[in-house]
Length: 279
Image (cartoon, rainbow, N blue to C red; front, side, top):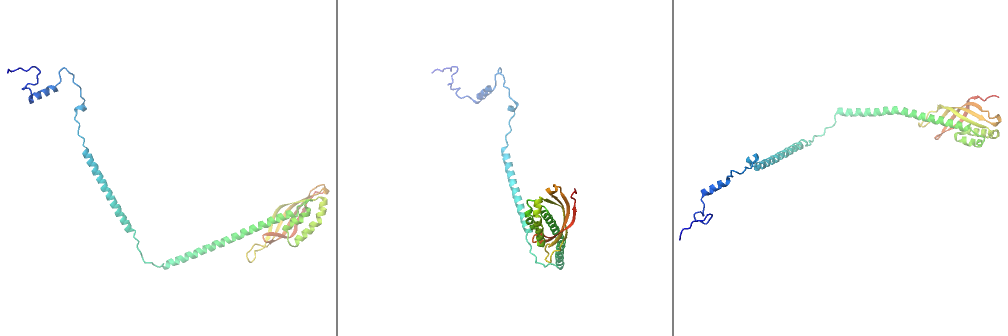
């Protein structure tokens, strides 16, 4: 059998079935080289600089060590707090001591304080009592003067229409014999004044308490008093052509207490001035 020459491109030749290492390296070098005619692709600095490996295990170990340090510090604080609490409990332990009676000086001081307190209370009471008594007396005098003024206004103010009931209206202020005397006087002048159509108006100008009896043995309010009342009285009548009759009168009233009410038991005229115009 004749030897046949291998055709170009035939890969089945025995000699070229296994390429050697040198030829493979040359082929790799040849493939790595770029053709001289082709343009080079620019590469950045970051791509040319090799990246440093990330040290993650070290950070994990650091965090673990920090956590362990924190736990140890917390344990130390708890131990310190427990120790301080134990010290406080030991410091607050109650110590019982035997009872000792009060000394002589303390007893004397207590007695002196008690005496001083009682004395101060007595002094305050002694100072307040006159004030209360004086205030009660002032209230009594005001009541007497008010009653006297209202009584005189009622006794000497009337019109022809109400003249017949004057004695009844005035009876609430009168007592004793004076009440009977006043009624007798009014009954005597009722008809003449009605016929003359007399109208009398009395205005109280002032009232004052002249005297007040001393309180009774039981310390109650006064039972007797005298008061003076100053008045202006005006009377008119058609008979006198309604020319006013002007009089200035003052009365002294003797009064007695009947329960809570002061009653007039006597009345006398102190001053009387007739200022009626003379025609």
